[in-house]
Image (cartoon, rainbow, N blue to C red; front, side, top):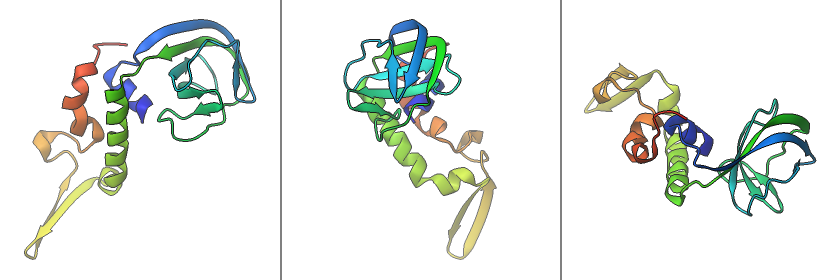
Length: 152
């Protein structure tokens, strides 16, 4: 979810970009780019591994630092960016992920339904909320705007 949030706000919080030729073998990136334990990083220019990850000395985790992921072995010319994502953005990303999981049925449905006192009705998604679609982007836009960049 952190990667989706960064894409939405056009801000990956890039600290240091390292451009060059890299090899990923058995989950290890070489040459090493000097990431710190727990630091997030963004791979671009790869055919198989583009995305945001979390570096740990014990292995690389997904963008939310939840579970070990297996990077695909490959050699590529690209960029590995060390990120400095604020803790507030990481916490908000976790909140958004929880909201999406809680509202998955409504998010996957083209209709929003409501019933009370024997009366029920359905609206096509986007009909309410001032015409805005029912999405995490609209729900959390005001909280994310503080970190939004005009372009990446």
